Image 1 (cartoon, rainbow, N blue to C red):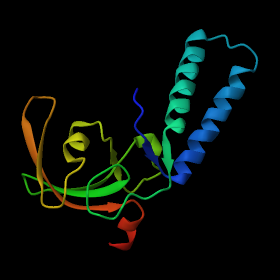
Image 2 (image 1 turned 45 degrees about the vertical axis):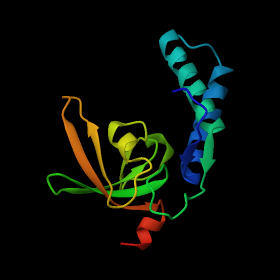
Image 3 (image 1 turned 60 degrees about the vertical axis):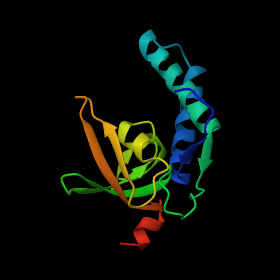
Image 4 (image 1 turned 180 degrees about the vertical axis):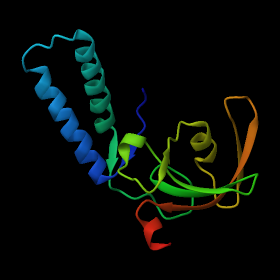
Length: 148
């Protein structure tokens, strides 16, 4: 992943990722590894974590303005009338088991970013078909628990 835009993370996720980075850095200075491929994988993960943590916005809830953006819990309705609630953010940037997480760079996340409640957005699925989705609600992560 490249870019300079900030990445929203919960405080817990930030601490977990920071600990992982410290462990990877310690392993880098430890005894040699017989499996060069796993060492390369650890190096790539270390670089990814360094970039992610450098761009992290930690624990700051987005404005409660109803606009879909990273750090918001979105409730949407698809054309088939099914609804889904999920966190718009990075999967490794949120410690949540109760919510699905969709990246802002995913087709669905990209279509919804910047949307307001009632707005219909469309995105393409891998088959090439276009899917419409209506944003019903967007609330900051954490506040969604109080609105249940």
